[in-house]
Length: 252
Image 1 (cartoon, rainbow, N blue to C red):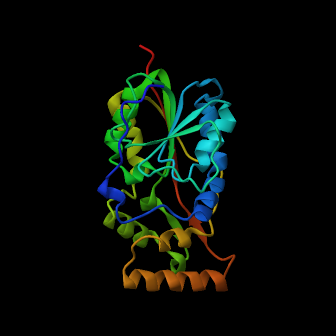
Image 2 (image 1 turned 180 degrees about the horizontal axis):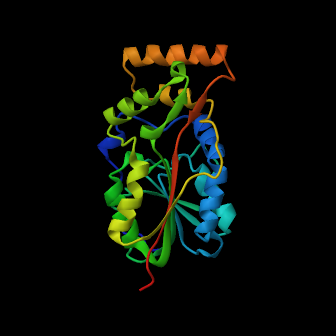
């Protein structure tokens, strides 16, 4: 895998938001494990030689990719490697941007990202993935669509808070629905799926929301929702649509 001079990422899109805590990221990785496993199997991870994770964060999934594939993994993130977290010995950390990858053309077999493209210029990142993937390589992405968040009853509704708070820091809360079009536009063969069973949004979703820059009125609303959820722990439905998109670069 040939690097092309990685450099620190200074993307303003996440300047107002740092990584969620390690505990929350571990919980998110566990919540997504089933869908991630199915998507990676569809992408043929067992036969891929050169594997990259974009938006590696704490390195939790990069280490998992090493274990799944039995091969080295290149973890790319705008932040420096988290030295206080134990990474798999076959993880190589590179500081770089998904929109301008420090990789040579046609040099990668599989690129994976989850809950990453909503923070990026997703269209540019998809085009850059097409550039660096070898013919027959795949881009596998799991992204949320907060615009389709389904909640009932109204006392636990957070959709408007999520969309407003994410937009304030330059993120795209509805990126999931846009990805198939972005993939198709640059020439990927596209397959889009959703999880094959209903699952509640994770119970710690309000903790993720609290780490965004909320207004005073939004924080008050979140506090009310949290109180309602404590008082009525089994009453209500919260479902966040997840787009699982697989793009294959044509061999010809």
